[in-house]
Image (cartoon, rainbow, N blue to C red; front, side, top):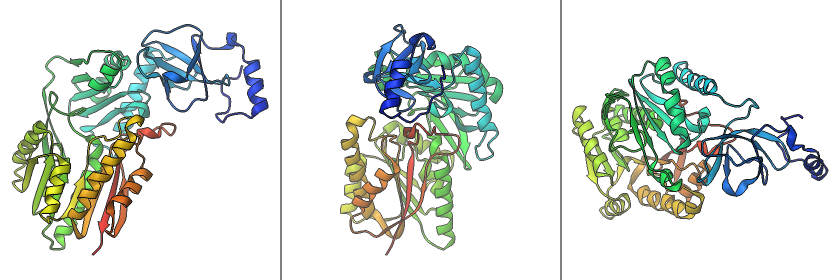
Length: 417
């Protein structure tokens, strides 16, 4: 039996032939047959059809589409809405050695890429590195991981010695995502190596940072915005060289990564806004560590505070809007799209004529096209030119068959007089 059939759906005669000719005895055991075609590396509960045997959570199972074509080995979770996560298209069943080889290859991709800093970067980017729902970031000698399904917890524990060996790291901190753990009926967990630090200390772009593993979001810092923070610094430095007194507004600033990069580049004043009190406290500490007194932090809801700034006719040379994930699921798309529209609608008037507006989205289900269309509607009467579109760095690879992996979108705009 040829296990590598074409990916496109066959015509009616071919479809009838495939379904009549497939002999289940020729299939890799254990197997599942989907109700319809394969639509990517994730298989939802409603797409599951016939089983050769019912697997248990954490088991690997061979996946066949409804036309009898083999689609790969997937990891099963009996309570997750994402019932199957494909880990390889190969017919060879993944073994412990296979996982170790994948981990080594993932680490080496970062070490071999001159555009990726060695000390602070993403090492495993979920589906992009064939470790679905697992993210691992490096901060010096510490690996910080987040598992978005319980089936990847054991996988991380197995491969961490390989990552330490290749990267020269010593510690690890693994946590499960609280929301997905609850959805899967699992208890959130935190696993750490002996003597693992509770506060991360690292440097990016000439700025020293501290991040709390207990209070931080995801892995404690947002490595995915590294290249965009650098670009912002270059933009502010160039404006400063032209003799401009640059004032910057950083909305949903978290610990102030964008704002501090702007201050280091010569901004005359930086105002950071965030709703997370712990993030604000850490941002203030980081500003003090780097002796950046021009960076000011305000604890406030972004929507209400932007309205207040608009009512007071405040304007800035550069405005950055980097909100949390407003579209976490397809069911929440309309509500999330409305939030993206509203926050950008409030921010556009705060940009001076001739100033720059940088708007971000970290929602994988919200495409760059949808973001730019939302920005078009939010801009209203302002004349806006897009000068750049960007995303995460090359340490965040994206699978071509998983467009949701392109979650970070950043639109750079210049507003004319």
